[in-house]
Amino acid sequence: MPAIEVGRICVKQFGREQGKKCVIIDMMDKSFILVTGPKKLSGVKRRRVNLNHIAPLEDKIEISRGASDEEVTQVLEVAAKTELMKA
Image 1: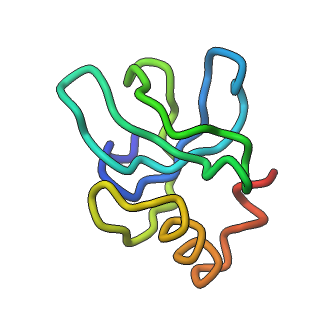
Image 2: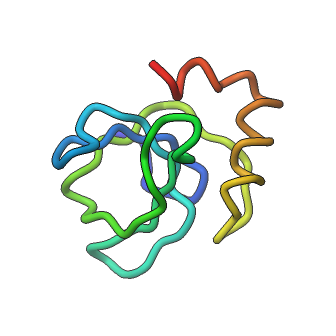
């Protein structure tokens, strides 16, 4: 299983955004992380998520901790992963 780290692309497994992809942007504590879609790209709002509610994928992007949605979108475009996030 891929490591839970900043920049890791994940799939939400529960809730209204179930099945949508998101990017980890911060580690809050041992149980929670901060993720974003960004909303314009994958439909996932920036929010706190329980670690048990996500499934990490092999894909990872290079972003700084707490990166803005605009920064995440730019890095995803450069890495040619925008289609992956929409799927």
